[in-house]
Image (cartoon, rainbow, N blue to C red; front, top):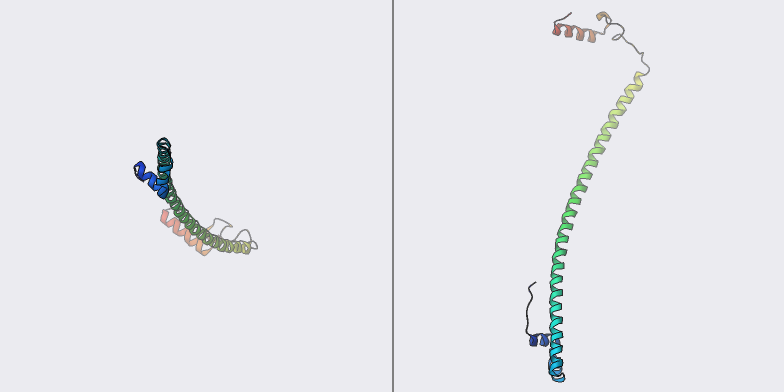
Length: 145
């Protein structure tokens, strides 16, 4: 805000309007000069305060801009958190589904014997048909025994 300089007479006329003539007629020259000096000091102080107000307005504007930016960032982070929580819920659902499946298979296997035809001996005839075929294929590919 630019400071506007006014003459002393204009200042007194502006600040005291209709009472300017009465003030100037009732005061002696010295009193009137003192009064106008005081009025000029008050006007300068008002101008300084207006400058401070302008500075405060700029500061408030800057802080408002920063607050809006922080609010936008917070909104983005909140949206991201919501998105990640959705992904977590999905992953937990999948985990529970597969964990249940494995637990079911584990429980079903508890009643089975610890050994079966595939792990009793290393002889190919003791292997299951599938494992015997797999072993034969492996040996053929390796070019070994």
